[in-house]
Every structure is written in structure tokens, then in C-alpha cells.
Amino acid sequence: MFKKLRLQHKLFLIIMVVFLALLLSFMLYLNSYLRSTLLNTELAGLIPTTQKVSDQVDTLYKQIDYAALGFTSNQENLEVMVNLSSNNSKLIDDSYVAFSKMAHNLNAIYNVVSDLYKVVVFIPEKNIFYSYFRSENLVKTLPEIYSNTSQSSKLFRTDQLFTAFEPHPDIWSTSPENVISIVRKFRTAYNTDFGMVEIQLPYKSLQKITTVDKQTSDKQVLIFNESGTLIYPLQYESNKKNSKMIQQLSQRIAQNTLGNGSIKLNNESNLISAHTSDYLHWTTVIVDNGDLLQQNLEHYRKRLLLVGLIILITVLLIYYVAIRKLMSPLLMLTKSIRSVNMNNLTFNTPMDDSHGFDEVMILHRSFELMLERLRSSINTEYESRIRNIEANYSALQAQINPHFLYNTLNVIAIHCEETDSLVAADMCYRLSEMMRYSGSSSSTIVRLADELKYCDYYLELLKLHYDESLFNEIHIPDEMLDLRLPKLSLQPFVENAVNHGFDKKLPPWNIRIVGHYEHATSWSICIDDNGNGIDQDKLEELRGKIALYKDNFIEGKLLANLQVSGMGTLNTYARLLTQFGESFYFDISNGEQQGYRIEFGVQPSLSEGAVTA
Image (cartoon, rainbow, N blue to C red; front, side, top):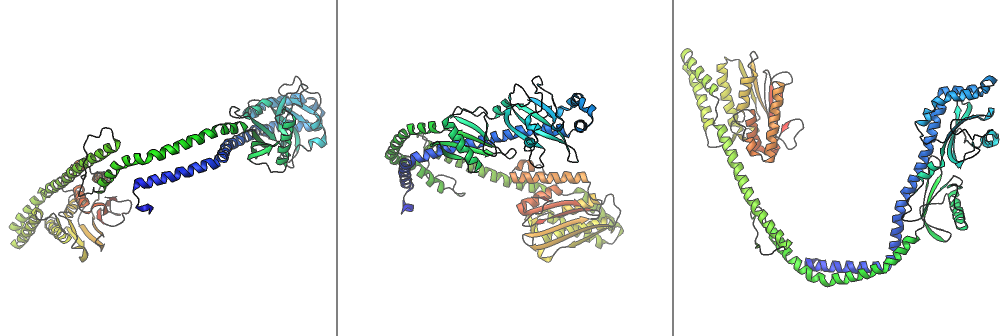
């Protein structure tokens, strides 16, 4: 039933159903849908922000650790620490001198960390420590966390050479500032520890990378350690509401149940995004209060409903009238387009030019003009190609090598004078047959058998000229003899071998013509000789010309190809290409040992590496 309706009726029914369905869905699910969309959109932006902050915190601590690793791996620094850790009292007394020697190796830290706050090298067992920066307020004794064995043993995990300190006040200063730091051990290849280095960065370095945009909503960045303890920010605004929220987040982190999404904290819906880092295993949490966005949603909901109703009613009222007016010229254009084919490149319903700025009418008229120009161009191009091909072929057919005629007539005269007349008569017969065959205009497409006969006459006359120094073999399957080729397709290749292949080679000279046949759409002919072959540069030049001709042929650049003249290899290739089209292939090369080789034919799939058309 629906398929039998006209297009304008189908469009009207579809749009009416779609609009009614949209309106009902809009009214029933608007609130939940828009809320979910808004939260998902906000969360989609919050998740990568959280991951970015977490990764940046990891990267910051990695930079400090890489700096510490470079410093502790320095062999000179390690030797100083080993000496200081020894029982040599003189070296212990000179510890400041020894630490000073390590100062020029601080480049290992500078190259990685630029915003340094303090670098402290110390040996807990000897109660020796030295600060390279901000030493004016340096403590007098080793901090308890390092001097107390039970506490220091808890700093490092098993087989771990470093530990990352959470944001904390500087324990090396009597006027401490908030810092972050990494502590790494000096360890020899024998797994013996000889002191430690602590590299500190100012707390503001961490604050800088944990600052997020606060223009759209009130976002809080919180960082918890593995046990769920809040470690950032240090000075967190503590009140009953916040304390309860932190407690709930800590519990979820400790239980590994904190995920991304909308979570109720303090009986209020909050958008939470959490990410646990791979390096420090700290959990970065961004808390976003979405109440403001939801208020805006409620504010515009009723307005959107009202606008939707007005749009629906308006569209349904004006659609039917408008579509009838719009569809009328389109239907006419469709009818006209369907009537167009290669035998009829005209419109059945021509339009006049009195429709002003009606786009459909303009389209109709433009399509009609395009068809008129297309028809004219096709006719002109088709006729031009036919005339060019005919003229080119006629010019080629009329060219005969005058040197061959001269040599043949000269040999006939000599034989008439010196030998019996039967040889001369036979030569005259063969030459006359060749002249009749090449000069005949009855057909431009001939059987392969006729082409072979013409080549045989040509070679027999040449044998007399070269005193039996020339030999030829022709091996063509009988089923190939009825193949149709352009006239004078084989002789130019044979003549090319005689004129250019044997000029610098002593006899005997051999020319072979071999054919292979599978079926009418898969056959080949190979012509080779034992001559000098062709110079590689000239071979590449000829291949380039053939490839250029092929491109011009495919692109229809007949004027460029009309520059090809004569009866040589390129022109013969052009006539064969015109005859057999895209299934024709052509390969020219030097033989494996000597001589020149030409192979051409027709096959369904062309092999790569040959000059083809």
C-alpha cells in the first residue's frame, strides 16, 4: 500500500509520523534525556581532564626521579659516598669538602628538572648531610624520619631504590615551605647502599598542573594516596560538609569502588571523575557540582516544549501545499531524465526561460543545455577521432622504404646479367606480390597468414641480396593463421632487425617469428634475432615514447599522437593498439644473450613489467 503512493504523499506521511513521534518522545523523556546528555557531555570532558592531571603528576615525579637516578648513578658521586660511608675519620671530617666535589655533577639534575627547590645528600648511618640550595635555615641534626631506623625502613618498598614523598613541609628547614620530593639511594653493583639524595620541588609546581578551568562549574581537584588518605591540597578547606565528602571518597578509594559518573555525596548529586596513576598509584579525583547546569536545563525546558509544538503545527499545515508546488517540476525533470539515452540526447519536454529564479526550472534548463553540448561534443570528438585515425593510417600505408626497392631492383639487374633468368623472374614475382599487397586499399585489416606471406617474400628477397647469409624461421600454429591484424604489422619489425640489428655483426644472421595460441582472446607473437640488440638508452627512450602514446590514447589526446609517423616500431605499435584496445600488450627488450626481441599479443590479464596498452 505504502509503496504505491506517490513520492509527495510518502514524504508527507513520513514527516508527519516522525514529527509526532519526536513530539511525544520530547514531552515524555525530555527531562531525563537532557539531564543524562548534559551529564555525559560534562563527564566526557571531565575524564580526559582527570587523566591529564594524573599523568602530569606522574610525569612531574618521574622527572624528579630521573634526575635523582642520574645523580646517584654517577660513578664519581658514588665513590665519594662510599668513602664517606667508610670508617675513615679523616674523610668524615672532610665531608663538606667531599660533598662540594659533587656539586659540579648537579648537571644530571639541572638537565631534567629546572624548578629546583633543594637538593640534600645524606648518610643516615653517619649522621652526615649536605644541602646544595637554601642551606641558610638548614636543620642541625638529621630529621627523625631518616635517623629513626624503624621509620626509615618503611620508606622504601622491597628491592626499591626510591620513594616519592607526598606534598609536605620541608623537613630539612627550620622555616619549612611546602614541597614535593623524591628520595633515592646510592647503591653499588654489589647491592650495598651508601647514603641517599633527596630532590625537592616547590609545592607550587604541583599546584600549577592541578589547576582546572573554573568558569563553567565549580571543580575541585583532590589527590589521594593508595590507602585513601587525602594528600592534596595540603590546606584543604575543612568543614562538616567537605569532611564527610572526603571520608566517603576515601572509603570508596580504599575499597576500590570509586568510578566515573554521577555519585551522591552528602545526599547531593556530584559528577565524579577518578583516575589512578600507573607510576605513583595515587588517585586523582575531580569533583564537579552540576546543580547550576541542571537549573539552566529546567529554565529552558518549557520554552523548548512550546517551540516544538509551534514548529510541528506549522510544518504540518504548510507542508502539503508546499510539497505539491516543489514536486511538480521535479517530477517533470525526472521524466525527462529517464527519457535520455545514448540514442536520444534531447529532452522530451523542453522548458522556456521565463521562470525567473526558480532553481528547479533553472536546473531543468541547465541539464537540457548540458545534454545539447554533450551531444555536440560527442559527435565532434567521435568524427574527429575517426578522421584522424583514417588519415594517419592512409599516410602510413603510403610509405614504402625506397632503399629496399633500390636494393631489390639492383639485385634483379645483377641476376639478369650474371645468372639464369629464373631467379630474376622469381624475384620480380615476389616483388610484384609485395607491391600489390602493400598498395592495395581494399582492406586495412588482413589475416595473419597474409602478413606472414608478405614477410616471407621480403626475407627471400633479402636472402638473395645478402648471398645466403640471412636465415629465418617461422613457427606459427595453424589456428593462428586466421587472426585479423592491421596490414603491414609484422614486416616493420623484421625490417628493423635487418637494418639495425645486423649492421655490426658478422653472419650468419637469424630471424625467428614464433606464435603461441590458446584462444582468440589469448595469443602472442614473438620476433627475435641474433643481432647486436638495441642500446639500453635508446631502448628506454622507445619505451618512454610507447608509454606516452598509451597515455595519450587512453586520455583521448589524438592531436599529440598524430605526430607519430613512418612505418617504424612506434607507429606499428599505435596501429596494433588501435585495433586491439585495452587487452593488447607490447614488450620490447634485448635477448638474454644477444639480439633484439619484440613480443606482442592479447591476453585477459596483463603481466606487470611490460609496456602495455
